[in-house]
Length: 374
Image (tube, rainbow, N blue to C red; front, side):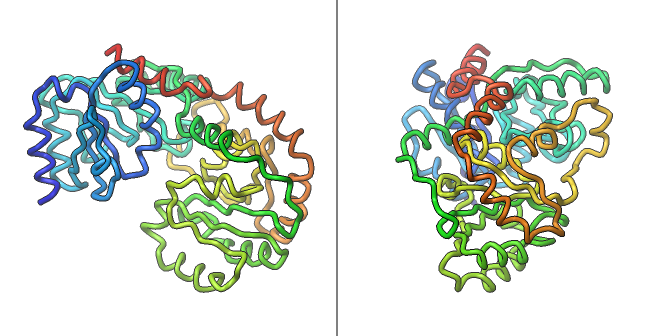
């Protein structure tokens, strides 16, 4: 078994060779770890181990000298490794440590560090107690620190170490945008619309995506549909139906590689429901977002006990427009209005972004400095 070999090879390492371990739930985790790992290798001279549950994770085949990568799958081998792990620091993007089958190690004291994989709040979309068993959180902005401290007070939890880190994914989007030639403002017939919903029974695909895409195509827009990774796993039939209906249109594209930034940079505007990628898109590219006002994605039904409005709720009208699902025919009008004054919109976004995100452009340095200090 490939995963069993990964476990054996990892356990064969000397303790000095595995003082810092990163765990990747899937191959998409790398984009959140990369800025931190780069700083650890190049600035702090550290060596890291990278254990992944994805057999096709590029890190497995593109290893650097100071990165040792191992595939451990997502079954009992992963569970066993977690419970017997011996290292100094474990860095993860997967929440809910101790809640399900992945537990803190019983073999040795380990400092568990959580890296956020979205700019959303910590209250509404994460499960209750999702972060309770981590020692430290690399927070993306002040709103997360306020929420975590409020939660600790409410539930009488031991205070965690909260680092003013920032968000590496946002940094990479901004950097990529700087390296691309600036696109001219497009006319209506050439505007590109990125449809990027979240997943779940009440999300866009399951409710009104077909009608929305139909309206956009009829109005001459270039439409790119980017499904959520969980939709790719659990809604394959619906996605096949979407491709079958619209695949013959020349101005319809379906993005398979959801880890790619290509569609983000190609789009003039995004349409979503409650996907966290909306904030990444608006903050990273300074472009507007249209939100179809479907039911909120709530995984913690006690979130209202924290008297702080989640950023994904508060920010919607500031970075675009909110449209009821029974007014989809008005979407083209909103597209033209929101794209009519891009410079003014960009100025407003920069102001909101500076108030919401730590260490813009330097999140990797902040996160790596903390990890290295351990």
